[in-house]
Image (cartoon, rainbow, N blue to C red; front, side):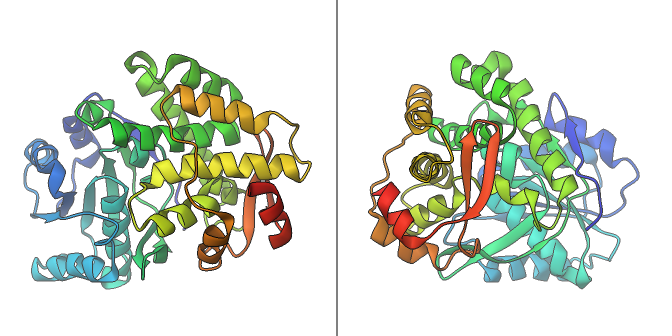
Length: 329
């Protein structure tokens, strides 16, 4: 997996056609909720071989669904030179990318993410996969997309809850890598005026980190800030708490733990909590540490936590269970 992480910007989804000139075998896999967007892309491209719609949810993000996509590709006689174009949120890009990684030992794919969360995180960096028995992304592969195409135009009708979920991941990225962008995002309330700039900045930060550590042997792990707690929160809620919401809560818990362990100065968690409250992000975790700890034991992070010395200063570490209980209860 030595490809560069390619991020492309456009005014509308039709602009992606310029990137795909000369492609002879394109298969679109899209979330059924964005069928109109997929139709616009197909019309702009012309000559798309087939279009497959998916029902999407965390419950349907399974190996069965990924295999279903490969079966559709096989029925359509997709060759090893085919390109899968995933259009939708992170569930869609994860499933389509994973299916592409399996079909004929790996064919190309590209992403047109249609949610804020996918634009700043899920569709960038080549992590693909599906859930197993309710645990997040337990089956998957590193399979880098040819490119990820970003356009803020597809976010205009996104529900407020979905925007907040994406905002949590965006702020996570800025907490890791750009204190100035974090301050701008919080002070602006993520206004439409600077939306496009902040989306591209967040995706670019992640792309830079992935380029330096594509297989997560080191630095890339910092992108999991809030996720060890967040995945446990999602699991405990049985899907009632969305990924972005859970990550926001997880970041606050990670900041409290950072303070308790003496990594961060007192006040960091309170500052982040006030900032998240100001932009409409939920910060109160409804589950106790006993419930979270049980779920964490099934997580892929293998006991690693991403903690903070401060904004722009992430730390990769392991935490004793006694300290976990002491500083997060």
